[in-house]
Image (cartoon, rainbow, N blue to C red; front, side, top):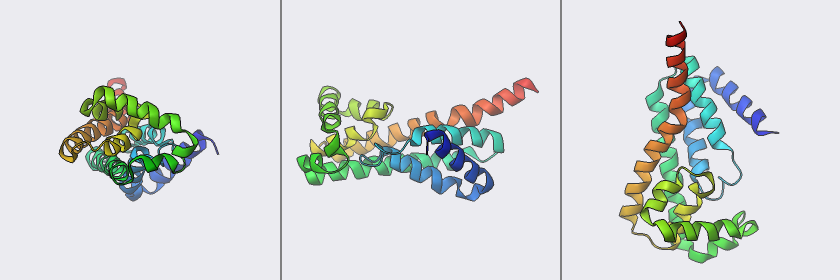
Amino acid sequence: MTVQDILHTITLFVKEHEMWAIPIVFFLAFGESLAFISLLLPATVILLGLGALIGESGLSFWPIWLAATLGAFFGDWLSYWIGFHYKDGVKNLWPISRSPQVLVRGHHFFNRWGVWGVFIGRFFGPFRAIVPLVAGICAMPQRYFQMTNITSAMIWAFGVLAPGAFGLQWLAKWMG
């Protein structure tokens, strides 16, 4: 099954069952932010597609944005927690054990940028889920991590959903 097939299946399901939009968006954002699942799940592409569905169907943007924000927040929080509690042992866990260079690059990025690395990393696919794991491994103070985590999650969720949601609405008004 290709990414396009997955995108089509999920957007079609949400279109037919709008009540599932909030939990689906939450779990997609959670999976996209969780260190181990994000390496396997093309959630950003699906969330962009769901953003367009919001604009097309008239679903309420803000509850779906909140679901994406909370999913991203909790995914990073769990990644941080895993790193904090298991330290360097995470390099032996699948799928990171199959791509240890991802953890090494995440360490370099975090060591260079610190708290800003957690914020910036949210917006770059390869670092999105690894940097919080590394922040936990490096025992970054939790209050700094969580402040950065919630702020970046709010902005990221808006950036992923809003272009489709508001862009299509704007385009429809402009065209008609």
